[in-house]
Image 1: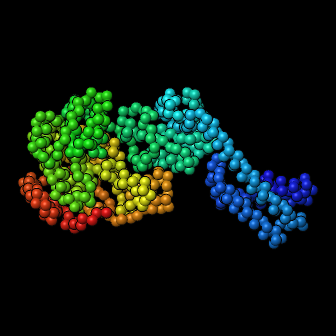
Image 2 (image 1 turned 180 degrees about the vertical axis):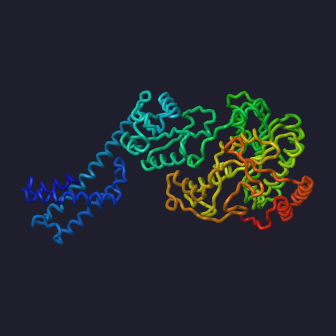
Image 3 (image 1 turned 135 degrees about the horizontal axis):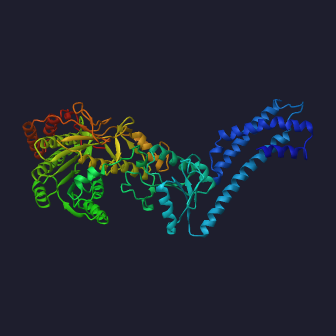
Length: 604
């Protein structure tokens, strides 16, 4: 811009102007530069990356240049540019914007040509990506080392950025730590970075979000090393690198497990996991295997999901015997045979019907499966002297407004009742929504985004507690070391998250804009859903355990005879498919008015 104004004066006066017009130049110089800087900023010129200069950038520069020229021409016509009794020459006013525009465009076009030339040199060779690793700690160094040894992957690590001031501008091996993540955008631009790898397993979600936003602005590919929830064994491999997901932005702190306490009740034992093919059940299988039980019994009704987790676990190095069992937890005789022949010592009961709207229209199935199945397993665990029994429950069991929630609350009551007269250590673990579990809202939203929207949200004010699948499984296993006397353990779910905010994050992670590229449609709360979730009833209270992320709710007194009588009535109603009677029976047991929640078969 300065060169453009200077060149205009030189052209107008065929060289250096005399003192009078030179004085005019120096007076007008800061005015012109100030106006052009303001115009460029308003038009968004400084928000663009030079290496991607195209028609949009040229149009922005044109608008910014012409707007200032228009202002200057207007001032000249109104005699506002009288300096030393001489007005600014029209020749300078018309020449300066042309020169300024050409200079501004030229340097940007040259930068783009330089970038394309650099890319063409790569294209002449096998295509390779220039990667910058965020995080120069142990994990980042492992990733860089493995990538340098795997030339077939086509990724060249050019260095690190790290926020530790002791590492900045130092060398780690042959690679430089260029600076901090604050200057990440500058490094991406200047070093021709194609890919950013986030290798900070312990980074808080806010930090991950900040880095991802920078990479999105720079339009570079972003990959991330899983967090500590997934790196249970502490081993890092490039095979674990993946695209940044919504789970990385959730906001959960890492967990430190009491491995000694867990190993004490799992190592060398026969462990039965029901619902082993589901999201929680399969993750329980993976994590229980780390503690090397003598045998794992994988029980599920769906053969495909059981086959899938069985094949995955067979590839693991741990010397654990694996037994796949296809069975229905409602079939007491089949379960009796399993307990009699295989003698499980630890039971994790994760099998359940969990879809709230579906259970509103299939009331009898919720009773038979969630209540009947739990009663079968709990009675057999007591009869065959199982050492530990853990029921996987839900926050929807608290003041339930749905058949599903009420059925899980009754399952908790059954466990508490049997625990009061058993040597088995019974416990129930209650937590909120598990992000990206099978049937959760995230896979549904991803499919809607693939189809171009709209993305459906129940209510703009709806909030839910969320945790990750690995975290939920870890805390369930940890709670098993604490369970006794039918205690209900409540997992620390952190702060509730607005469903609407989660939807916005997922759209942005897909490279799209909420409300512009993908419409958000509010469909209203579905059958049985609450606007807000709870984790405890008023009567249960809350007591800390020795493990900081697990709290225990005090068991409520249960009249065993009354419970037995009401359960019989409930199962009789389920056999007759009497939904109204089932709802009345659930209301008696859990104290909530479920008759209010009767819905038609039209579920959105």
